[in-house]
Image (tube, rainbow, N blue to C red; front, side):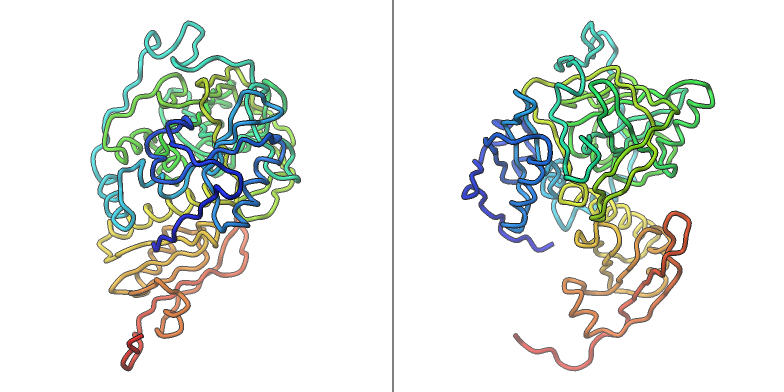
Length: 428
């Protein structure tokens, strides 16, 4: 990936700070971190400020907002997951990270250590280092866009299990705040969390749910990834982190989380939304499950992370996980892939460029089998400039129906740039 110089946002009224001074871990040293000390409302104004900065400077700054007017004493972390922070959390370098992550995934998992209750929890049941709050009213949960149905927890990672404690799943599930102790959560029927809920419902019980924020960004990579339904997602995290993972509570959350929500998901539905989704369009009102909040805890002074759907951070996670999973799949089959890139401009999942010295339709078809959401697969020896590659290479194609929610919605296309340009290239 060609890295453009990061813009300097200090002229916009932001102040550059060291990550520890902003309450952030060492992996944030990979980017410039800013604070915004202007008084802003959690209702639209924080998210709008980030959007306006991106429009003006061509990039979205990682910013801690320190004066949330309607949630005095709290702070919000905007754009929490830039690509450089994800790579730093993985201790991996751009360009070499795909092979590195693929090798880690293929390795044996490390221990997932559960801290016993007497050392992990205070007497109140709150994880040590976190303070029990009164509910959502003590948190700076944002309303991101004017058309959203209210405040949404967007960067929270939900943790669910089966009734016997197996099948630990991490996932991003949007949570709409209704009141201090009540919310609505959308669980797509295709998700592992929905499968877990069905098993709890079959036993006549509500499903326990934990939602955590502020932990090592590697957990966000795992939560965004489409992983096998079986097993424990913390074992995947241990592979990527190359070390032991420590969790606490039930359902378990990482011991380094800065915010933890606990609750029970009832098999009872209420209208949720609208919500500005990642494709840049609102999802209109739909049915979500009722979430009764039983506990809210936070580390004093830690900023509350928030992702604007369809903007940087959310789309970065989408493309990042698609890239490493596709690379691991194709190279695991012995296919000679050099790199995989999902376009952020195509919402991080609908256009993929696969660089290989041996482009062919076999590779294209395998990529399309692995990722049925992708609409366009490009496979060629040099895709650093896609327009140039399409202009100079001849290609063969594979076309098939594109399914969206079980219905055919046009076609999806794969191109293998198999015919190199002829003649002698110009010098400059």
